[in-house]
Amino acid sequence: MRGPKDPVAPTLAFVESPVQLLNVLEWAYRTARRDSRTPAPRAEPPPLCDAVPRQPEQRDITPLAGDLLVVVLAPHDPMTRGQLRRMTELARDQGHRVRWEEARGGPGAPVSTVGSLAGPLRRARRVVIGDPFSRYVQLLLTLTRARELVVVDDGTATMEFVSQLARGERLVRWHRRTGLGARGLVFAPVAATARRKLTPNNRRTVEVFTAMPVEPPPGVTVTANDFAWTRATHGPPRLTRGTDLVGTSLVETGVVDPERYLAAVTALARDHGATRYFAHRRESTDKLRRIAAVTGLEIVRPELPLELVARRGPIARTVLSFPSTVVHTLPLALAGTGVGVAVCDIDPTWLTEHASPRAEGFLAGVTGTAREVRRLPRVPVPVARVAEGTP
Image (cartoon, rainbow, N blue to C red; front, side):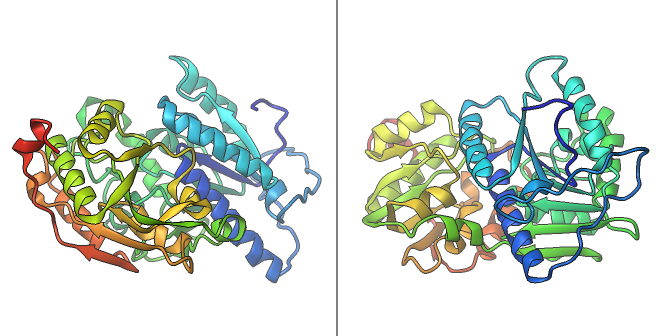
């Protein structure tokens, strides 16, 4: 729900994907446990605006529950929206307030959304974001006076964010080419202001809450995300035989050639006895139909992030993935269950001519820094056979 009746929240969290919301819940759980071990008086919001009424203390399931308002900046994609709806139910079950914003609902939606959030943003003591590359989030950051900024994981993009912040570079997603374009040039001043807001100083702290291996810039605090909330509230799963294969959206983002990807999935399914294919929420329906027809794999479209789906089970004893977030997160979420995670590298010949020059190095880094995973050799991809529909 949205509107002026929302009580003032010392902590605002902005999310645009199910994984971001999952990691906000993980951050809230860890923060609540940390605060409960070291009791302290509740800090008053800084005097940043006039006549802000003091709100009564609220304490629900966790010490943080009454203080946190999660704002969902809803995307267009139906699969993402569906997973986000399910995740908001879990957030409310934990006692957190959730405000769903149709932030992309029409030409006037952005102006309406930003206008309605300006007041809460200026009053918030702490702001949590899931995607520092999002132009929507960057615009909102220009309005905040928060003394604490927290960036939670949006997958492997966190690795690139931290690297760019350390080098003082503008924030650009790793799979995009470096050209700004007309819209980028118009938005450049906003992006620059947001990057400055994400740089700590004597008035503002910056924390990165992540499961990824990162080297923080000076002044940035890194807190490890070990998926304690996921492990405490879900599972352990029932294990099945065989192998589960995890899909990726590298084709949809223009990084990997679709025929070579299909050939690689076919070879991996055959060689490792895979029976199920967990689709990424951004994978196209046509692509998934082809995978099912060629490989015979059962296509599973998860209703929640894979970390939760795997923890709830059933899940195979071996989970096979291409370079992606899950090679870092699944070993943490499934710790102690007996599930093994294996990763197959992306061969440079699979990349499209439109792929960013940084793509090869970035994907290699995702795999090379993963812990507790088994590395598989790159697979040959007989493109011609697959293109003809031969399994």
